[in-house]
Image (cartoon, rainbow, N blue to C red; front, top):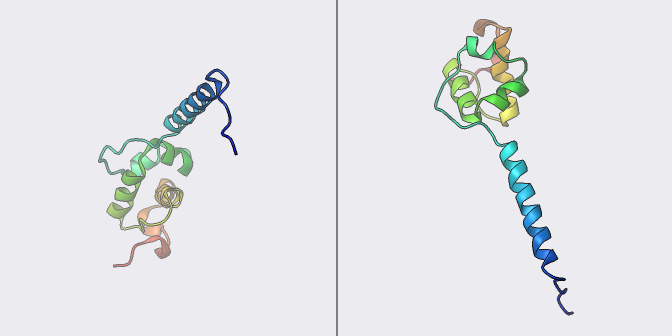
Length: 103
């Protein structure tokens, strides 16, 4: 079979435009940069939801914060954010043992 002919460079232009759109949307939804911080319970209380927490704080910072509190730090980033978000309304001692890491 014969290759498709490029009609006046329009195929290259469409490909370049699609590539630019993909790069733009990827950078718009990029995860926050990891700044090395560890969140406190007071920091967590500033967020309205686990989704907002994940959108504003890097997954690595959430993981470090969970480790600091002795909570499980595995799973998907959404699961980790939900686990850390428990600290907004629940004191550490009242969080169910199932959320704590094995010792």
